[in-house]
Image (tube, rainbow, N blue to C red; front, side, top):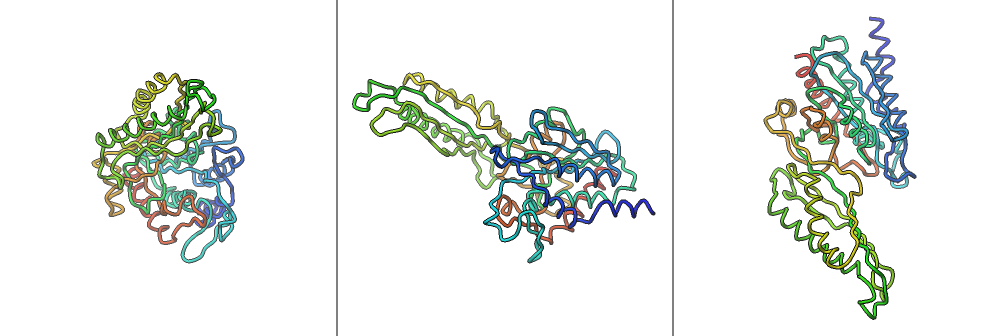
Length: 390
């Protein structure tokens, strides 16, 4: 009895936990100006979970200074359930916030703060759900997983996949889905295409090789390829049923009276489940390389980042059915990407489901509805009961 009281004193309630997590800045960004360590968040979670009896591992992400993953395990066994989330947030503009982004503020039946929704708010709810099982016999382990850099490079999830950790049978990622299960999402590819020619006086085209004209032809090939993919691939589970390719930005040349010597295009591709990213890059190269060769241009083609593969868990999967039963909602598809593909690579049946709405993520005055809290705890307890004690 004394031990139980001591644990409760060392592990605060949901609001206090979230307040402390929000107060610890952990922005991840491709920009060094914004990028921060997540160590304080991970170590705080580790302290609470150790107090509850979890065995806690804090793992440095290889090759990335100041970034850490946490794997906290309660119980033993070959299967088990992972409740996963990321500890980082996106950058913010404090001037556009009506409240301090790093102070948990309650108003209008909402909790405001950077990361309340996406997705520090998931951790206190997962810990609160787990608290009820601390003294219960678990037939399979319960694992709480906290990752680094989901909002930028996904380096935390990639490192876990390479290490083969954690080992479990089922995983739920608590991204904001309004507590509706998500079994599919598109992938993300962001690519750079560069054509280099030869600058010269525009009065005589023979004096140079125009990279901008080459890029015009290459973009036509990309648009034709997009059309082919959209004829070939379609999934009605998505609001946008086809893969998309967006020409995002282009830079080339320096003056109207000079032949353009260099042109660079950045574009975004969102593949559907079943579309392989390496194959797509190969098909792109097959289309644009002949353009460069015909025009005597040097070609550069590379990813702007490694990309996120598309994700799908079959509708008849055990985890999907369990989450549908607990929530009363049929599992659906979303356009945003998550760490789910890497948890799948480790060998876990994976699903995305958590409190809050993606519409509030990445926005000033980010918030989490208080009405989502208790339902989230009860759903997570239902999952723990089924996959860890059953």
